[in-house]
Image (cartoon, rainbow, N blue to C red; front, side):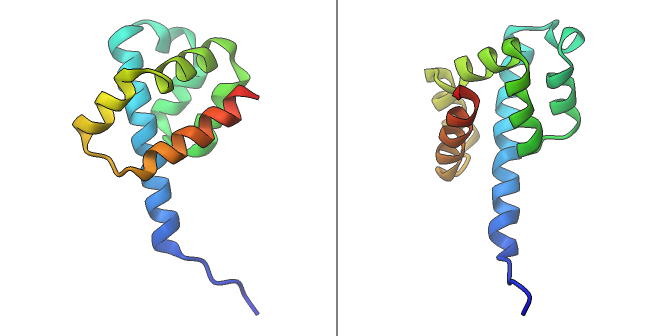
Length: 102
């Protein structure tokens, strides 16, 4: 018997990770203008806003530090409220922070 996947749940999860990536990229563009020339992980994230590419930030100390700094800031909360993203986004960000912190 084949497993049944809840496609609407996985689709909304993908959308949340795209939203998280967009929040991070907007923050980086605003505060660290030249980083995209220097950092291939952020360039890759620009092209494909996926969980896999968010997790690849762990490979790069600079990218990881900037991501964790933003994800632990009050600016993130303000950006989420302004963008009116769903609250589940916070749980995904917490899981991502746990992954990047290890």
